[in-house]
Length: 188
Length: 188
DNA sequence: GCTTGCCTACCATTAGGTAGGTAGATTCCG
DNA sequence: CGGAATCTACCTACCTAATGGTAGGCAAGC
Image (cartoon, each protein chain N blue to C red):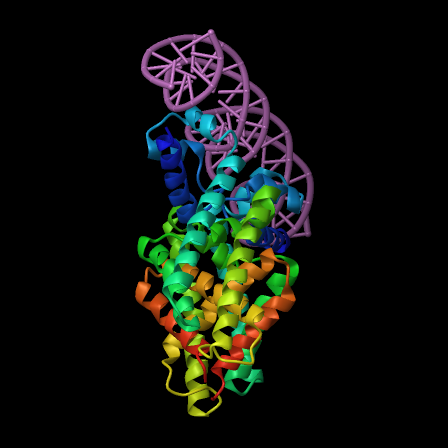
């Protein structure tokens, strides 16, 4: 039952991450999925609805991954490194971050989407802050730095690296930046 | 003589940095400048021409700023900090990086624009690499790290911070990330 | 027998771009 | 010098294709 809808979400995500929200149309999506343009409106009445569903699905996938990392990895830097590796897939596939693609279009975006994106980043910020704080407590993360500020710095570095290294199609360079980032978090 | 052209470039830059390349139209630009839509084609025959001119002007402004920084600031971390402050203006005005906005649309972009953007980043990369190498030589930048890798890491962090802190309209947070970044470059 | 999921056939609007014209400045040249 | 030719910068009016979205129909299945 949900097959077409899921396919729509998948293809739409690829389109947005590859060319931006304003850069793809229902016609593009219809062709990618092999359905008529009007049928998309049955699943997602407006483009803004589709965008919101996209962000929701993307955020849910990340949320699951973040949970798994906290379960499977013990130390702070290791967790941040695992977090950074989530972005690596984008570089390898030539796809940017969905929320970065949306954030770039800022003003032109439906207000609702803008809030969803902000919430996405806020969730990651909170997760990272907790991870870094825990790391400071157990001594795996350098002390003295504000975890909240550190969290912002971590996301910024990874989002920026994804943006740039996708352009250069260089997963190796992304790994290099991730290494510098994680290394800087370790206890001195 | 060049007044209208300059005005077109200025307004177009604001539009692209605010809503992306696909997110603005010649009609938007015409209204912003107070000219008829068709007249824009007199100055920039196609949208791709306008985009290329935009990147060229943006890159030239940055090139001048980079030169000034090397002239006016002596130490490595100080230079990187001055470089980072160039991005701060964007956060304060709610505008992203022009080349980041274009990079996001990747595949959908005219091939020529994609190369101009890559060249923009390569120029900054080369500048930063030289600055960091000089800093290592004069002892103001921590030794042992590959300057090329460090340069990529610096741009990534700043581009990412601009992307995110524009969304949150938080120059203070940008400053925080810049501080973490520069601090990490100092001699240990 | 009504809901689901898709279809064809539209719609108004907007997209980037073109055709052709005009007022005013600049240049060419006898 | 004066006038003709040209160029610049803009205009109105238009084009075709694509945009997001709607109306209404039809077949399948719980």
